[in-house]
Length: 420
Image (cartoon, rainbow, N blue to C red; front, side, top):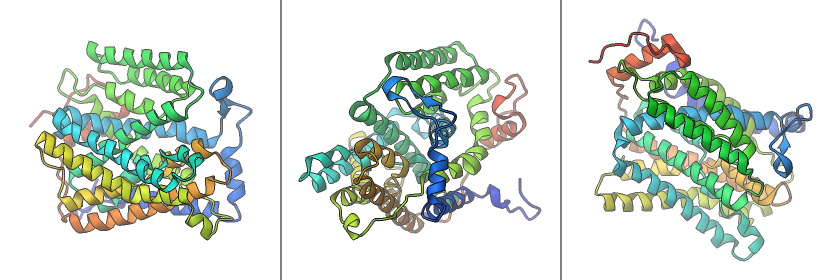
């Protein structure tokens, strides 16, 4: 909706979600380091009515932090998964050669930061357990910061970061499963595989209604939660099974994606930032700033991420004989944003070192490295990206109008807007 002058309302501007996310991050940091910090921490971490998540030795208390990170954020991963599938099936990444580019970039963006961390901590074998801390990109924050530039960022470049971040996080989850997880539940993993397989069969059989996918997606999430594998992966897997087109030429996937958009941008991401972005810095000093873990994590994010992604991406471009999704300066800026580690990096750091003395340098490294990566990435991209307006296809606009009417549980038999 636009005003009489043709200008968009503030909540419809592309930059609004990014500003809200940054504001939520600052508020979270200030609250956690205020006089109310301990109360907020207690509120988030207190077990709810003696309930636990998981089974046996792998069980952990159910609290608000777990609900937001393992349940609410699944919807975010579902949303970005839908967007990635749309671009993969009918967009620029439908060519496997082009999809290989963010895959190569993600691999390089995991290897280089890990090598930098190892180089700084080789003197202390016990510290090497944290090698994967700077290897992850936080999708929510990276995309949120990128949105501050609005339509100035080319769609292909944004999609590259989105695909890169998703693949990166999937890689991080695999790393956690193989190197940090010790309480995997086999039968739950089997149940997740069965649920995912049934959804794939539904797609192949021509089931276009969204409700069955949401129900099985909920079951998939439950199995993932119990299995010990990060539950948010269920959102991406569910998105991969949602039908792209129905018998009338409409798109259940685009309908669901658009219906989820405002919930993700104005509710889920800010809540996520409020709970996860704040880091308590009480008792930290100069020694912490120059700790080898702090330096390994921070420099891995700030330098390792762009270096690894750029080298791997351009190598893939040479091998595949295709162009990069942006200019060299644009690629540098977007790969710097990939150095925003935040949640997944903090999560891996907790798995590696727990909440003991080494937790503080981990937090300093993740927070400092992510902040510097965000600032440098924004500065480079603001110079590299021209002030051009984003172009939305007439077909996508028509689908979004239909989504406004029917929402995430649309009637698949409703009349569709004619194609141009």
